[in-house]
Image 1: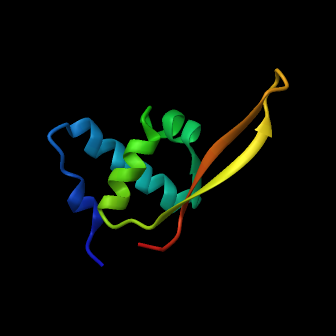
Image 2: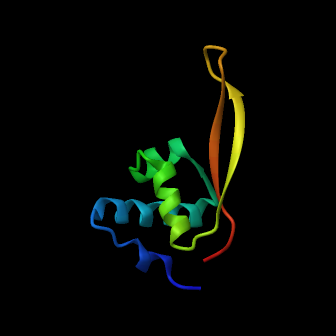
Length: 86
């Protein structure tokens, strides 16, 4: 498999850096939520960065978790799971 890190070069270096950080954390943790991606990797647009990683050949599955917030309202949250060791 090609090295995905080499495919992250974008016009905006911030996007490339975010993709590298997300991939490193996914390799370490195996899975992350959008909130964790924002907090740990500084990427507010987790869905967009996961899309970029997928375009670079990284196999990431989205699993949805349902819950209830502190106000009693239902919600669902994306859990991004690294499917293959790279």
